[in-house]
Image (tube, rainbow, N blue to C red; front, side, top):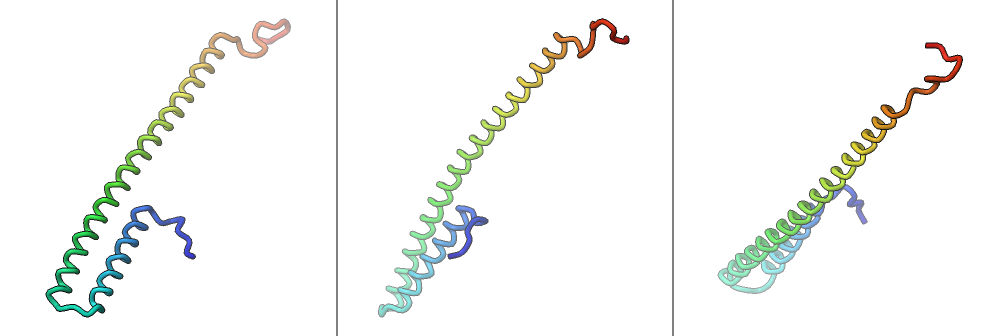
Length: 108
């Protein structure tokens, strides 16, 4: 089996649809039927394949939007945590004198 780590869901769906369409067309062309009947079957299948492609694209698009929202939320959580950490450190620094400050024998 091939390594699909680099393949996106869109590439996989597109490849599947192309394979399905090619298989159908070859099946129709090799089956005994009149030219008019064969053209009608190819036209009908092309319309079905186009609809399947559209539905797959819409589904992948919705999933991508969900993923983007999750990433945005997680990024904002990270930013908020960093801001809180910096604010705490600022407070600690302003409320606590530097090490050695005010001890006897310290040089000023």
